[in-house]
Length: 102
Image (cartoon, rainbow, N blue to C red; front, side, top):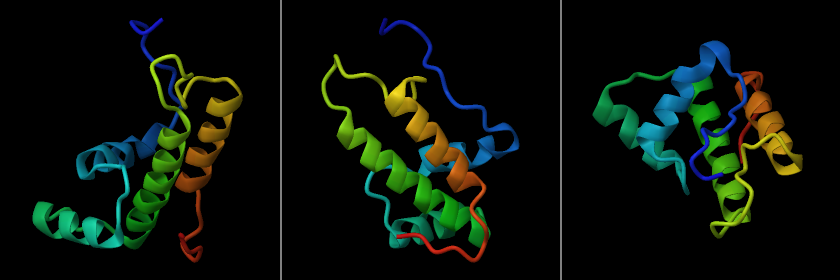
């Protein structure tokens, strides 16, 4: 089971945001971390990307803390926990510009 490729939600043209999230590091990501990463990498990301990265990092952090141990179900498998994560990721990617992030 651990050798299988994980099932990930389809995110289409937003895959670059996930790549940026993995580059900056998704666990306990702060606004200051994002700002520093943006300045150092000279990515010049826009407001939507900042908010989406922060929102995705919050989702990732919360879900990673819910799944501890090798026998736990991965948070992105399409089961009860995975479906919730998929909805959260999709919601974060489609968040209107005016919405704030906790």
